[in-house]
Length: 433
Image (cartoon, rainbow, N blue to C red; front, side, top):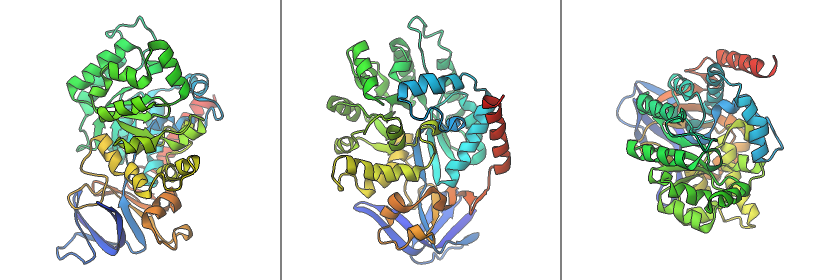
């Protein structure tokens, strides 16, 4: 199928920043972009779509989420991280069954797809249910079976999560024509033991996998790890070989200068989660210092229990303004840097070098925004319009690998009514019986 999107404004990433073409054309041949220009291409397309009054932009990449936690939207609000986890969240998670994960995953996908997310990285259990939901929906995802261990006496052989993680990798890595990547994952330093982390990190390296972890989310986590091991969480993971594989590290709020040097030396990508860190009172990640060191910084929503949504436009907005305000410097974080965090930097973290920008030869992972909305006019700066004016509800089309998943309020791959009904049954079972 060859599709021509015509008459649109198109946001392009250039070496010296972003530029916008007006009233332009973008051609899609099957899964890839094959034309971008201000003149109509000579070659014919099977379908021509009028996109006048629309802005075409790269799909957003949510690099850290727990999408099935949509079942816990807002649970434990007002609690600090450790109390939130152990007193509010873990007791509910103990009740979850496969059907809950299936329902919540699809419910989260309709939120993300309608909001312009074309790929996400997720960390949760019963991940096979999320794999199947992603296959059905047509979105892209890096998924994993997270490993934990609370018992110092548990042997590597006794840990059931490691073989589950490996089996998921062997069965589904590269599935759905490459839309699905399977990563390895360690939840955090404070939820796992050294010998398990070392063995699992070695396995990830041997298999050529990618690792996804929580890292230094709070000052308390940093302090207690030093008390336990005489090392920061960053130093601890490094000593156990975790960073010998391409690693995505969520949060990185309480990191030292040495920690950041370690992250840079190992090519670790950092996932900035502005809303979650603010809501849980975790603090401000030093992303300016990280970027100045050349660390790849990306964006994530975290789960809806600590956000309370999966809206990447909010994450862009906060990432652009909160550090400026905190440091009393409006030039600290640029619009281009924020757009990169939400797109091309996220693609690098996920190991997807064929997406993240609109360019000929790249995958057609494209979103369209309705520029007729009052808060999007006048437009003197398109990148700033995306990061500081646009809302998730402005997205009127989401395309992945050249296939439209959502357009003008209609989902093309998921039955919204069924998805909602399944979610309501899961909520009823968990909370109202």
